[in-house]
View 1 (cartoon, rainbow, N blue to C red):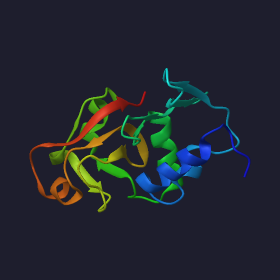
View 2: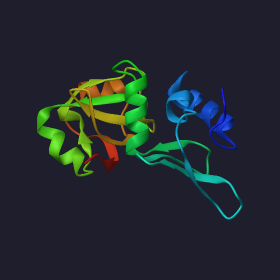
View 3: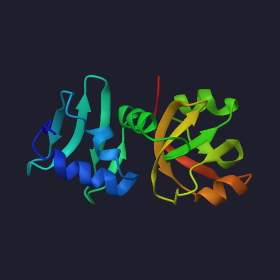
View 4: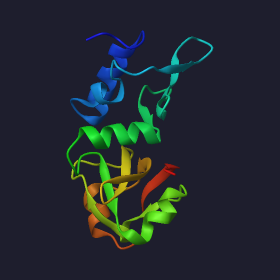
Length: 155
């Protein structure tokens, strides 16, 4: 496979580790043009395409998803992988970038742990991306509490 940019192999491996096998190819496919934002020490900080923000790379080496990254993961993995599904009532709030609460969760990837990056979806559409605040079991069982701290809402 032709590398789309220098460092893509390393980023693919990180994505596969963080999200599961195949995530690296989904996020960093060879057919796209990528814009890289680098730190003053030349470390990759953000990856963008013409479609939008794919990921940011934290100082700990983990990814935080952008909306485009969430969409790419959702297209590549069968539900419920990497997803927290919410009911219709939550749709406008999550799209605005507001947090998703456990009371409105209708389905969740059973592998999700607190701190994981997730896509918030309704009927298969990515509404936002953010960080899980509860485990999958807690999201399913609790009637109160924040399930996902939403970072970006989709337009």
